[in-house]
Length: 316
View 1: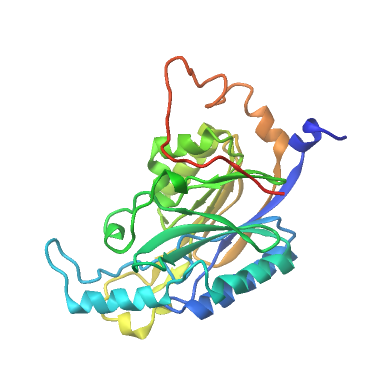
View 2 (view 1 turned 120 degrees about the horizontal axis):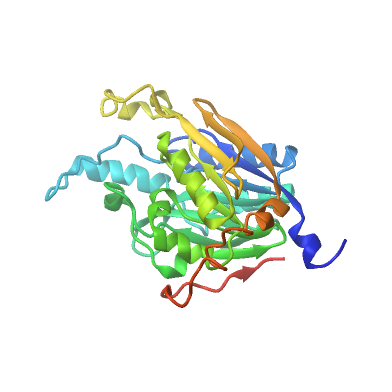
Protein backbone atom coordinates (compact mmCIF):
# COMPACT_ATOMS: atom_id res chain seq x y z
CA UNK A 1 0.00 0.00 0.00
CA UNK A 2 1.30 3.45 -0.91
CA UNK A 3 0.31 7.03 -0.20
CA UNK A 4 -0.86 8.88 2.97
CA UNK A 5 -2.77 5.91 4.38
CA UNK A 6 0.30 3.65 4.30
CA UNK A 7 2.33 6.37 6.03
CA UNK A 8 -0.20 6.47 8.87
CA UNK A 9 -0.20 2.68 9.25
CA UNK A 10 3.54 2.34 9.81
CA UNK A 11 5.34 0.69 12.73
CA UNK A 12 8.27 2.57 14.30
CA UNK A 13 10.64 0.98 16.80
CA UNK A 14 11.85 3.42 19.47
CA UNK A 15 14.20 3.15 22.41
CA UNK A 16 14.45 4.96 25.74
CA UNK A 17 17.81 4.91 27.49
CA UNK A 18 17.88 4.78 31.30
CA UNK A 19 21.53 4.97 32.20
CA UNK A 20 24.17 6.50 34.45
CA UNK A 21 26.41 9.19 33.01
CA UNK A 22 30.02 9.63 34.05
CA UNK A 23 29.13 12.43 36.41
CA UNK A 24 31.22 15.60 35.96
CA UNK A 25 33.26 13.92 33.22
CA UNK A 26 32.37 15.12 29.74
CA UNK A 27 34.61 12.79 27.75
CA UNK A 28 33.53 9.63 29.55
CA UNK A 29 29.88 10.69 29.35
CA UNK A 30 30.28 11.04 25.58
CA UNK A 31 31.74 7.52 25.52
CA UNK A 32 28.67 6.21 27.34
CA UNK A 33 26.31 7.97 24.93
CA UNK A 34 28.09 6.32 22.01
CA UNK A 35 27.91 2.92 23.71
CA UNK A 36 24.15 3.25 24.23
CA UNK A 37 23.64 4.42 20.64
CA UNK A 38 25.31 1.20 19.49
CA UNK A 39 23.08 -0.84 21.83
CA UNK A 40 20.02 0.95 20.51
CA UNK A 41 20.99 0.23 16.92
CA UNK A 42 21.56 -3.44 17.75
CA UNK A 43 18.04 -3.54 19.23
CA UNK A 44 16.63 -2.23 15.95
CA UNK A 45 15.68 1.21 17.26
CA UNK A 46 14.96 3.94 14.72
CA UNK A 47 14.73 6.67 17.38
CA UNK A 48 16.59 6.84 20.68
CA UNK A 49 15.91 9.17 23.63
CA UNK A 50 18.42 9.94 26.39
CA UNK A 51 17.64 11.53 29.80
CA UNK A 52 17.77 15.17 30.80
CA UNK A 53 21.33 16.53 31.14
CA UNK A 54 22.96 13.17 30.48
CA UNK A 55 26.13 15.12 29.68
CA UNK A 56 27.65 15.77 32.17
CA UNK A 57 24.88 14.91 34.69
CA UNK A 58 21.89 16.31 36.49
CA UNK A 59 23.56 17.70 39.65
CA UNK A 60 20.98 16.31 42.04
CA UNK A 61 21.61 16.97 45.71
CA UNK A 62 24.18 19.72 45.23
CA UNK A 63 23.39 23.15 46.67
CA UNK A 64 26.08 25.26 44.98
CA UNK A 65 26.32 26.79 48.47
CA UNK A 66 23.52 29.20 47.59
CA UNK A 67 21.04 31.06 49.76
CA UNK A 68 19.00 34.14 48.88
CA UNK A 69 21.29 37.16 48.82
CA UNK A 70 24.61 35.30 49.14
CA UNK A 71 27.07 33.55 46.86
CA UNK A 72 30.35 32.01 48.02
CA UNK A 73 33.69 30.94 46.61
CA UNK A 74 32.78 27.36 47.45
CA UNK A 75 29.65 27.60 45.30
CA UNK A 76 31.57 29.26 42.47
CA UNK A 77 34.13 26.45 42.54
CA UNK A 78 31.34 23.86 42.24
CA UNK A 79 29.87 25.89 39.39
CA UNK A 80 33.27 25.92 37.68
CA UNK A 81 33.43 22.13 37.97
CA UNK A 82 29.96 21.74 36.44
CA UNK A 83 30.61 24.38 33.76
CA UNK A 84 33.90 22.75 32.75
CA UNK A 85 32.31 19.34 32.30
CA UNK A 86 29.32 20.71 30.35
CA UNK A 87 29.42 20.76 26.56
CA UNK A 88 29.09 23.12 23.60
CA UNK A 89 27.05 22.08 20.58
CA UNK A 90 29.97 22.94 18.32
CA UNK A 91 32.52 20.70 20.02
CA UNK A 92 34.59 17.55 19.39
CA UNK A 93 32.39 15.58 21.79
CA UNK A 94 29.18 16.37 19.90
CA UNK A 95 30.99 15.64 16.62
CA UNK A 96 31.95 12.19 17.97
CA UNK A 97 28.32 11.52 18.91
CA UNK A 98 27.18 12.68 15.47
CA UNK A 99 29.54 10.23 13.82
CA UNK A 100 28.21 7.42 16.02
CA UNK A 101 24.66 8.41 15.07
CA UNK A 102 25.59 8.36 11.37
CA UNK A 103 27.12 4.89 11.64
CA UNK A 104 24.12 3.58 13.57
CA UNK A 105 21.55 5.25 11.29
CA UNK A 106 19.37 6.08 14.30
CA UNK A 107 17.70 9.40 15.12
CA UNK A 108 18.81 10.54 18.59
CA UNK A 109 17.48 13.07 21.10
CA UNK A 110 20.08 13.75 23.79
CA UNK A 111 19.77 15.71 27.01
CA UNK A 112 22.81 17.88 27.73
CA UNK A 113 23.84 20.81 29.85
CA UNK A 114 24.81 23.13 27.04
CA UNK A 115 27.60 25.64 27.46
CA UNK A 116 26.90 28.92 25.69
CA UNK A 117 30.03 29.75 23.65
CA UNK A 118 29.44 33.48 24.15
CA UNK A 119 29.27 34.68 27.73
CA UNK A 120 29.33 31.42 29.66
CA UNK A 121 25.73 30.68 30.69
CA UNK A 122 24.51 27.10 30.85
CA UNK A 123 21.24 25.76 29.45
CA UNK A 124 19.34 22.52 29.95
CA UNK A 125 19.04 21.40 26.33
CA UNK A 126 17.49 18.61 24.29
CA UNK A 127 19.69 18.13 21.24
CA UNK A 128 18.29 16.46 18.12
CA UNK A 129 20.42 14.42 15.67
CA UNK A 130 19.26 13.25 12.25
CA UNK A 131 20.10 9.76 11.05
CA UNK A 132 22.96 11.24 9.02
CA UNK A 133 24.60 12.45 12.23
CA UNK A 134 23.81 16.11 11.67
CA UNK A 135 22.48 18.29 14.49
CA UNK A 136 18.93 19.13 13.45
CA UNK A 137 18.40 21.64 16.22
CA UNK A 138 17.79 21.99 19.92
CA UNK A 139 15.22 22.81 22.56
CA UNK A 140 16.38 24.74 25.60
CA UNK A 141 14.31 24.45 28.78
CA UNK A 142 11.91 27.39 28.97
CA UNK A 143 11.75 27.59 32.74
CA UNK A 144 14.23 25.81 35.01
CA UNK A 145 12.66 24.68 38.28
CA UNK A 146 13.69 25.65 41.80
CA UNK A 147 17.45 25.96 42.28
CA UNK A 148 17.89 24.95 38.62
CA UNK A 149 17.21 28.64 37.92
CA UNK A 150 20.51 29.40 39.61
CA UNK A 151 22.57 27.21 37.28
CA UNK A 152 20.58 27.22 34.00
CA UNK A 153 19.33 30.09 31.87
CA UNK A 154 15.83 30.40 30.42
CA UNK A 155 14.80 30.01 26.80
CA UNK A 156 12.01 31.40 24.61
CA UNK A 157 9.57 30.43 21.86
CA UNK A 158 12.33 29.88 19.31
CA UNK A 159 13.20 26.76 21.27
CA UNK A 160 9.80 25.08 20.86
CA UNK A 161 10.96 23.00 17.92
CA UNK A 162 9.35 20.07 16.11
CA UNK A 163 10.44 17.87 13.24
CA UNK A 164 8.41 16.20 10.50
CA UNK A 165 10.37 13.03 9.81
CA UNK A 166 9.75 9.72 8.08
CA UNK A 167 9.25 8.30 11.59
CA UNK A 168 6.53 10.81 12.42
CA UNK A 169 6.27 14.32 13.82
CA UNK A 170 8.65 14.58 16.77
CA UNK A 171 9.02 17.20 19.52
CA UNK A 172 9.41 17.40 23.26
CA UNK A 173 9.71 19.25 26.54
CA UNK A 174 12.13 18.76 29.42
CA UNK A 175 11.08 17.66 32.91
CA UNK A 176 8.68 20.10 34.61
CA UNK A 177 8.09 22.03 31.39
CA UNK A 178 5.65 19.17 30.89
CA UNK A 179 3.51 20.70 33.65
CA UNK A 180 3.11 23.87 31.53
CA UNK A 181 -0.24 23.46 29.67
CA UNK A 182 0.51 26.15 27.08
CA UNK A 183 3.95 24.71 26.32
CA UNK A 184 2.36 21.32 25.70
CA UNK A 185 -0.32 22.90 23.52
CA UNK A 186 2.34 24.72 21.52
CA UNK A 187 3.67 21.28 20.53
CA UNK A 188 0.25 19.72 20.04
CA UNK A 189 -0.54 22.50 17.56
CA UNK A 190 2.42 21.30 15.50
CA UNK A 191 0.86 17.87 15.24
CA UNK A 192 3.42 16.08 17.41
CA UNK A 193 2.99 12.31 17.18
CA UNK A 194 6.07 11.16 19.13
CA UNK A 195 6.38 13.32 22.23
CA UNK A 196 9.73 13.24 24.07
CA UNK A 197 9.99 13.93 27.79
CA UNK A 198 13.52 13.58 29.18
CA UNK A 199 13.40 14.22 32.92
CA UNK A 200 15.07 14.10 36.31
CA UNK A 201 11.77 13.42 38.11
CA UNK A 202 11.81 9.91 39.54
CA UNK A 203 8.63 10.14 41.58
CA UNK A 204 5.92 7.59 40.90
CA UNK A 205 3.52 10.49 40.26
CA UNK A 206 5.53 11.29 37.11
CA UNK A 207 4.01 8.22 35.51
CA UNK A 208 0.56 9.81 35.85
CA UNK A 209 1.82 12.96 34.14
CA UNK A 210 3.21 10.99 31.21
CA UNK A 211 -0.01 9.01 30.87
CA UNK A 212 -2.05 12.21 30.97
CA UNK A 213 0.05 13.80 28.20
CA UNK A 214 -0.36 10.72 26.01
CA UNK A 215 -4.14 10.84 26.46
CA UNK A 216 -4.37 14.61 26.15
CA UNK A 217 -2.16 14.96 23.09
CA UNK A 218 -3.18 11.63 21.55
CA UNK A 219 0.49 10.97 20.94
CA UNK A 220 3.12 8.40 21.84
CA UNK A 221 5.12 9.55 24.89
CA UNK A 222 8.74 8.57 25.55
CA UNK A 223 10.04 9.50 29.01
CA UNK A 224 13.68 8.98 29.93
CA UNK A 225 15.44 9.40 33.28
CA UNK A 226 18.89 8.66 34.68
CA UNK A 227 19.70 5.90 37.14
CA UNK A 228 22.16 7.42 39.65
CA UNK A 229 23.59 6.26 42.96
CA UNK A 230 25.42 8.39 45.48
CA UNK A 231 28.53 6.32 44.78
CA UNK A 232 28.46 7.49 41.13
CA UNK A 233 29.46 11.01 42.17
CA UNK A 234 33.12 12.03 42.38
CA UNK A 235 34.57 11.55 45.86
CA UNK A 236 34.97 15.29 46.27
CA UNK A 237 31.19 15.59 46.75
CA UNK A 238 30.83 12.83 49.34
CA UNK A 239 30.53 15.20 52.29
CA UNK A 240 27.85 17.35 50.68
CA UNK A 241 25.84 14.26 49.74
CA UNK A 242 26.23 12.37 53.01
CA UNK A 243 22.53 12.70 53.90
CA UNK A 244 21.28 11.57 50.50
CA UNK A 245 19.86 8.11 49.80
CA UNK A 246 22.17 5.52 48.26
CA UNK A 247 19.99 5.52 45.12
CA UNK A 248 19.51 9.17 44.29
CA UNK A 249 17.57 8.66 41.05
CA UNK A 250 15.81 5.29 40.63
CA UNK A 251 14.69 6.10 37.09
CA UNK A 252 11.12 5.41 36.07
CA UNK A 253 11.59 5.62 32.29
CA UNK A 254 8.52 4.61 30.31
CA UNK A 255 6.90 4.46 26.85
CA UNK A 256 3.14 5.11 26.59
CA UNK A 257 0.63 4.84 23.73
CA UNK A 258 -1.89 7.53 22.66
CA UNK A 259 -4.56 5.58 24.53
CA UNK A 260 -2.58 5.69 27.78
CA UNK A 261 -1.37 2.10 27.58
CA UNK A 262 2.10 1.45 28.99
CA UNK A 263 4.10 -0.12 26.16
CA UNK A 264 7.40 -0.49 28.06
CA UNK A 265 8.49 0.15 31.62
CA UNK A 266 8.46 1.84 33.96
CA UNK A 267 12.02 0.77 34.71
CA UNK A 268 13.24 1.22 38.30
CA UNK A 269 16.56 0.91 40.14
CA UNK A 270 18.74 -0.18 37.22
CA UNK A 271 20.15 0.84 33.88
CA UNK A 272 18.47 -0.43 30.77
CA UNK A 273 17.09 0.14 27.30
CA UNK A 274 13.31 0.16 26.90
CA UNK A 275 12.03 -0.54 23.40
CA UNK A 276 8.58 -0.49 21.85
CA UNK A 277 7.07 -0.78 18.40
CA UNK A 278 4.80 2.23 17.86
CA UNK A 279 1.76 1.27 15.80
CA UNK A 280 0.58 4.46 14.09
CA UNK A 281 -2.84 2.95 13.40
CA UNK A 282 -3.43 3.27 17.16
CA UNK A 283 -2.54 6.95 16.95
CA UNK A 284 -5.11 7.49 14.21
CA UNK A 285 -7.80 5.46 15.97
CA UNK A 286 -7.27 7.44 19.18
CA UNK A 287 -8.49 10.60 17.42
CA UNK A 288 -12.01 9.20 16.95
CA UNK A 289 -13.33 10.55 20.23
CA UNK A 290 -10.74 13.17 21.19
CA UNK A 291 -8.39 15.43 19.23
CA UNK A 292 -7.15 18.39 21.26
CA UNK A 293 -6.13 20.39 18.18
CA UNK A 294 -8.84 19.01 15.90
CA UNK A 295 -12.55 18.56 16.55
CA UNK A 296 -12.10 19.15 20.30
CA UNK A 297 -10.13 22.40 19.91
CA UNK A 298 -13.01 24.91 19.74
CA UNK A 299 -11.02 27.51 17.83
CA UNK A 300 -14.05 29.79 18.02
CA UNK A 301 -13.43 30.04 21.78
CA UNK A 302 -9.72 29.43 22.33
CA UNK A 303 -6.62 30.67 20.51
CA UNK A 304 -2.95 30.26 21.44
CA UNK A 305 -0.26 32.49 19.99
CA UNK A 306 3.33 31.39 20.60
CA UNK A 307 5.89 34.13 20.10
CA UNK A 308 8.72 33.20 17.71
CA UNK A 309 7.96 29.46 17.59
CA UNK A 310 9.60 28.14 14.40
CA UNK A 311 7.78 26.23 11.71
CA UNK A 312 8.06 22.46 11.83
CA UNK A 313 11.25 21.38 10.07
CA UNK A 314 10.85 18.74 7.37
CA UNK A 315 13.55 16.10 7.77
CA UNK A 316 14.18 13.56 5.03
